[in-house]
Amino acid sequence: MSPAAGRVSDATGNWVDTSAPEWLKPYLRLTRLDRPIGWWLLLLPCWWSAALAGVVNGAWGPDPWHVVLFLVGAIVMRGAGCTWNDLVDRDIDAQVERTRSRPIPSGQIGVRAAYVFLCVQALIGLLVLLQFNRFAIAVGIASLATVAIYPFMKRVTYWPQIFLGLAFSWGALMGWAAARGRLELPAFLLYAGSIAWVIHYDTIYAHQDREDDALAGLKSTALLFGERTRTMLALFSALAVVLIGLAGWTAGAGAVFALGLLAFAAHLAWQIVRIDIADPDSCLGMFRANRDAGLILFAGLVLDAAFARVL
Image (cartoon, rainbow, N blue to C red):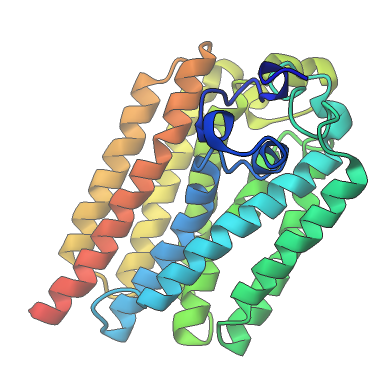
């Protein structure tokens, strides 16, 4: 197999292609370590929640140890989730131009080896989870149900993005549970707001595959919304901003958080104005831009907690 043949068509020219050992490349591609945007989007609700809990606790910000644990956990569990997703979707991925070169459908990794690799990643994730309090451990284990069902939803509903939101937003509960040892209203509002945000960005992402998905009989909000996508993105991004704002208000966050939330909202609005849903490169670029939007919101939460201590 030539080096080019081993590449994944929607992720080329990265550090995995140029620097990783040949034997390791398929596994790194399977976990999407060559595409960090996925673990960033899984991580950010964790950090938001930890920072918001810091506001309530009167701390300078989120617990630094929790910040590190969530970073490691997000990278590992995003990889495990991708492995599971690719195992479930291996026959479908073989029919889609953008995904047929992925390690499992292309035969670079066998199904049995992928299941073993999945178990290894899950064990590492469990070790990270066990560093939290008992309540947070229970909340983390409960998240597995959302991860397990998500890959099947595109077969039965035009709203698989809701189920991705349930899984990818779980950190909005985890950060709070780790810091507070229980779940309260701000965490649930933040979780709901994050789900709306996931629908926003994953609809953008799904527009890359809408023609292949339609041919394969799969469903998505990109297909459901069609030419109404810009309007629906505005609706869900506005819902995200309102719900996250309510989370901050009920947690006692102040003016600095409000400024951060305003900047977050402006970034989402910029995405909606700029996106061309007929251009896959535009969709991918606007999808990736959500990392910056999420970091803006996180910065607002951290600075709000710090300013509250100073003042």
